[in-house]
Length: 146
Image (tube, rainbow, N blue to C red):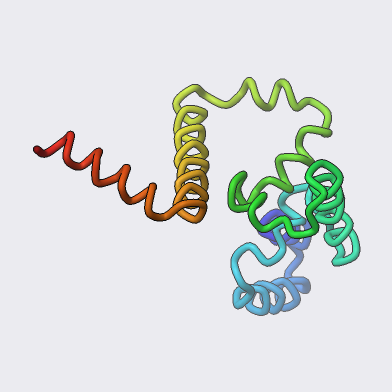
């Protein structure tokens, strides 16, 4: 949205355009930040139908792979941006975009993903056998502090 507003300010510079530009700037000032991200990021769908199809592709692919209708654990495990990642992999120039990411940023994101994955694994271990999980924790505690 900010790109559009900047374009409008630069395009409509005549004095008679000032009331219109001022009105639009005041009106859009109250919009939620990020509401019109599709205008700033060209690869995001613009309409609700396009957005639904955008999500449906990832959801259908997950269903095809796992056979599960519910994809909540898939999102929890891989992150809420998995839909954008799957879309980015099909875009042009993905290799050059990935090369532009510095190593420290990559390492930070990788640690976040590993932490998220570890939380998911620990939760599943606990749900599978709570007594064994707690016994293992107690054993680790004893090894560290006794």
